[in-house]
Amino acid sequence: MLLAGVTTRAQIIEEPEVAFRLSSESQKPLLMIFSGSDWCAPCIRLHDTVLSNEQFQHYASDHFILLKVDFPQRKKQDQSKRTANEKLADKYNPRGQFPHILLLNADQSIRSILNYKNQPADKFISQLSAYFAE
Image (cartoon, rainbow, N blue to C red; front, side, top):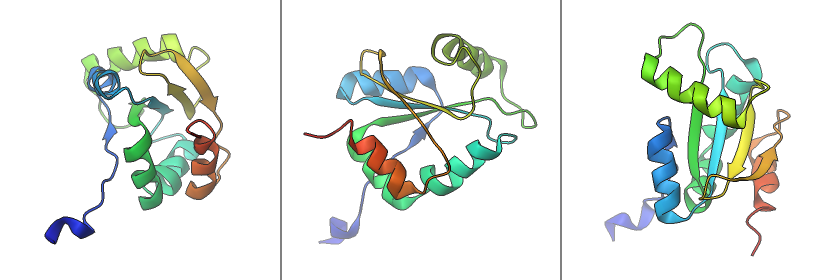
């Protein structure tokens, strides 16, 4: 069978309305990551060591919707996206921490605030797994 080797990978969504709609429709929680993709060293490490990791991608696709709320300094971002991200920051990241990672329920309430301390993908998955134990 041709599709036997195909595996599902999570998509990093950067449009909040799309991510919230998918979370609501699927009743999957939403992992929201506030990032400074072109200036925040821990954010860049999180992307390179966790978000881009194949094991994490597979885990994420099964367990949650992934939303990246980005605040770049050097790369251009259209005003509507910037405004939407600022609105999310006012609600979910009022202290302006980067990276700031939240696990939200499908109703957009906060389930947990997660820590990223430069751990590799498998350790970050272990931290997340505590919230999905059956």
